[in-house]
Length: 477
Image (cartoon, rainbow, N blue to C red; front, side, top):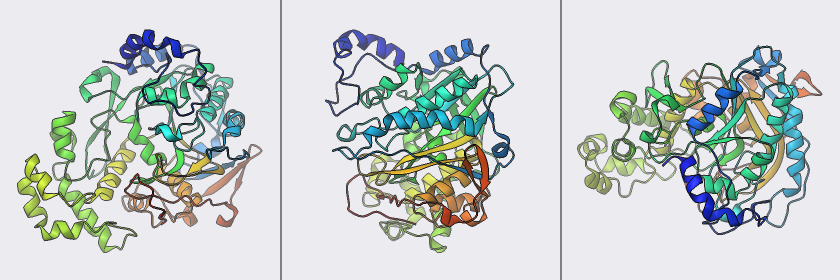
């Protein structure tokens, strides 16, 4: 069942909730409670965008950014707010919207090309009931997005849509996203279908991984991402994640890949089985035949290079003791024997596989611009474990690797040691050393070179690695 059908069928039974006012600030409520608002499916979103193309003006990136594709641009924001009793910066909401609107004219100029569409792709993921809040640092701020889209509209870019594939429409509704988006007439494509076969062929675009892919060769995105006349704004959050480490521009691309292909977090030993049996995707066509060995070879290379916190739980020696690849390959296609073989090997080469899948997709799926919303940042796991911090930065650029490297630096990490940015440089996808990246301030609409890294205020945001439980320990690179 597509999302629009689900929403229509459930609307009558939930209409009584619409007038309760419960959703104004999305405070915790029962998991089953939801109102009448809701997103649209891919086909409906495409239809809306098609109708809006005639009166649209495509946004144009200001020349200083456009002509420096490997540079990173920083905008300092000046949002201030006390923490509320739950630890959130609730009073910052009007400022977040104002900031989102004001920064548009510092990043874009009014374009001259008519037609097309724009998609703003935020990081919207599951927010557990105990931390539901529209300002929680788990999600890109919906208030910031609303102001940002209003700013785009002021430049004539009126055919704008947003999308998500990270969680359920119910979670988005409870978290207050629709309260904000409905107020500003912003549509959200809810692309989190149950299985890959639920997507129609004309709802997808396919991207070939250039060069020598490690894990997969062909990657789908749901439309309009990948359409020739679509302007793709990648807008992640400044936060940590227990597997992605710092989850910024590169990881946010995971959310534009449809169900079945978009599960980068599957473990190394189970990925092929899940893809074939649970997701029912064309594994032989789209994945590299020797991906198992490719990931293992890369893992061993990086272990030898002394990657920090590598094989965090020391699982690989257990794998070696059980016979390694020669033993695993004999059981990998039998679910019962595979589970027995890997019973005490949770997280086996997990980080390496995620990194290589994410970098394959970063090589194939290219946003027009990346804008990290780092007004409010978050440490911890990326979900319920963590603390919000006022960081007051936007990190902007055309290259995901450089943008993520500087974003990670702001978070207190060394991107030359952070595994995914380090491997990205190794694969020739970009530079991760902040000393070798051209960095500029955008201040009062003027572009000014950063003279020294010491000018950047850093806010420590550590990782709660490989677990959603509170450990009392945060890791840094």
